[in-house]
Length: 388
Ligand SMILES: C[S@@+](CC[C@H](N)C(=O)[O-])C[C@H]1O[C@@H](n2cnc3c(N)ncnc32)[C@H](O)[C@@H]1O
Image 1 (cartoon, rainbow, N blue to C red):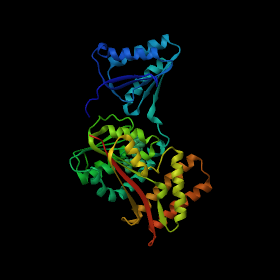
Image 2: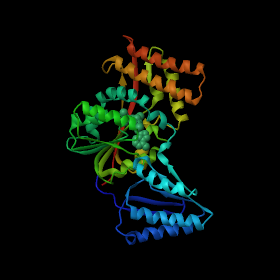
Image 3: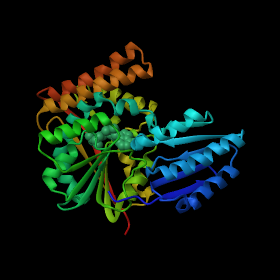
Image 4: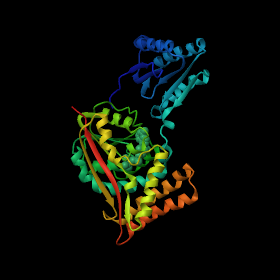
């Protein structure tokens, strides 16, 4: 990663003073313009001034002292003003550094914005999600390995897999398509730890597994030929924000590839009605946590509204006939465990509801394993080109 240039900005409508990039002045004079901007911001606002350091990669002591002086002096002279410093766990040192200020001045508070920044975060980033991701990729890869070349995958490219989960997709891509470079980013420490362990055991050494926030990435603009983001837009409450970031890091002429589901279209025979009922309920359950697992067919709109052209969409059905039916059954078991377990319980569902909810998953498994049964899980793969 090349060094991110320093950037300071004040937005009076949100009362937010933003510091981003690498700030390492030798003397205060070098950042005089930014300090002046901060003082002007302070004069402009009433109530709270937000200091956004979510993308502040590095700051030396000279810069920190200069900023701290202005903020502390203001606290002494302006009783009407509070400061909220907004940090990110991705740049963990900012929290420690600014917490020091809040310990000496109660009118300065520090928030780590990504400790609870989307409603489904606790489930998705938890270790309990790992078995779901493992079995899912095993099933979808059979399809995606032939789909991907139509969406810009080829040997020698520079690519990023954003929201990479346990990193298995990146490892499969590495083996099959030999990209020149692959960055795999996720916000789950548990998944990344798993990814690194698996990669080491497969002797895959050159995937750059990176801890980060996909909606505020520290990656530079315009650097990847292909950016993939699989099954993840659907778990964000603001998929548009995430797509903007994917667009930003993609090279002009490069492509962004996304996959998403429409859970209510999962199907099976026999017991189709019970199965259908449960997956309609899955969609509602996710909506309760502000996630849209019906996003698949909306991909075209999302890509177009972000500014992509040459949009390609295809859908495929993962079924029990794709390979070993037990693989399909394992995916459904993993879903049942988290959706009818942790998630339904957290929503406060009754035991009667949970029993019926579980039955649909069990019927889906029955259909998958029955010698004459059929079970399906539809997925939409879509990509768009960033205009040159
Ligand atoms: C449904 S999983 C999909 C994982 C992987 N792409 C796959 O298909 O197996 C969603 C992933 O998004 C990650 N994630 C959620 N919010 C994120 C964020 N703000 N930044 C980066 N990753 C995030 C989660 O940790 C999780 O690994």
